[in-house]
Amino acid sequence: MNRLLKIARAATPGKNTQFRKDKYGSSGIRSFLRDVLAMANAPVEGPRYIIVGADYDAQGHKRLNSIDADDFSGKPSYQSLANEYIEPSVRIRYKPVSIEGKRIGVFEIGDCQDRPYMMRIDYSEKLRRGDAYIRTKDSALKMGRRQLAELFERKFRDSVSADDIEIGFPGEIIHKDLQLNCCDLSQLPSAEASKKLDELFAVRNQSKKTGSTTVMARLTHARLFGADDPYVDRSPDDLMKEMKELRHKYRDHDNHFLFESRAERVQMVVYNQGQEPIVDASLSLIMPNHNAFYVAATLPKVPRDDGFADRTPDEIAEYPSVSLKDDSVQVTSKIGDIPIGEPIDVFVAPLRLCAGKDLGGKRFGIRYALHGQNLRSPAKGKLRLIFRK
Image (cartoon, rainbow, N blue to C red; front, side, top):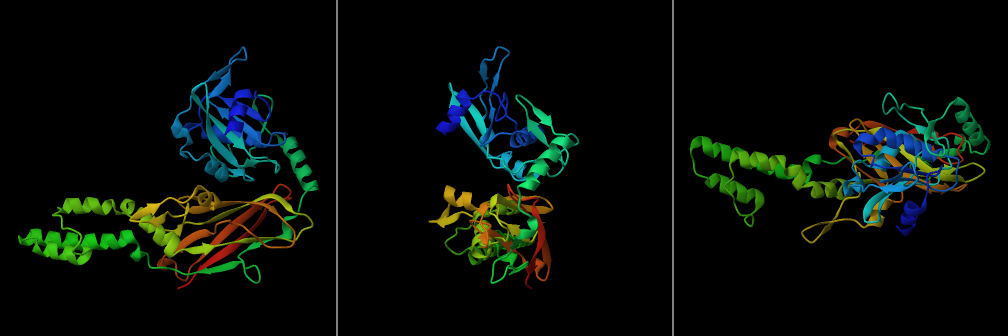
């Protein structure tokens, strides 16, 4: 943190440092993506920095503008935005520092040796797939065909062919298919609780219609929840409200069921058969989303005493980056250098999946892309998940 504070205090605008008066936030995503592209493509060595909450007036005096604490909460997730829209992957760290009592934000963009960095998909009409920017002394300039061609030619001369890379699931040989077990999702803690409330709701409704006492409701409650759980005379509206809140109430229990007790732990390997190590590699995956297919966005909490406790920061950091979309699941893992001649695990902590019985007998395709500083082009291909009946 002291290092970032020194940079925020002493740095001046240049090819590796940009100052911005206001936070990006949800309304400034286009500007954020453009600025990250420009900094990543800048012809400098080492990390690059975007400092928000500070700029310079016409006389060259630094002005400070405090940034809301909410901007560091992960909403929006700046790293996830970069993962989704920019290729190759860019490492970003965003931290607050305090200068003269004001909170300033510092984006640190990791050493970028895999230029050019470009838009992977469209963000808007003004920021399209294939767009690339480069940082000049004090602005972001859109790159033209000649500039891009020069970067690609330089990359091609000093690179490893994607044909020398094999990616798949581990075993005696590297497999392209992986069979997974399915589980009964009706056993989810929230689903079990919902079934009990449904039955109690039906008995409560029947008692109301017949004008009977609540004896049946009490007996049903004791059978479902046990004698130690005191009966509360809840109206049908109360029961309906409780049903709606079950997923939130049992969120940690459900996550433990899906991603701990019933989880399939998936590892992948990369095998470099080339003549030199791959530098600063990362792997991205895209797989379908489905209402019976669950991928942990983070490791589940740990049961402790009568509740659940958070994982350690190191455990959380070891899990791959997962982004859940309406129609897809996107996974990114930073691998680092890949040596020659031996399979290397992709994930420090294996990816955790859980599939419901509705997927039994079905197959999901996985598209992958391996990026590296000295890869001539990303190593791309397809794998398959096969769900057992």
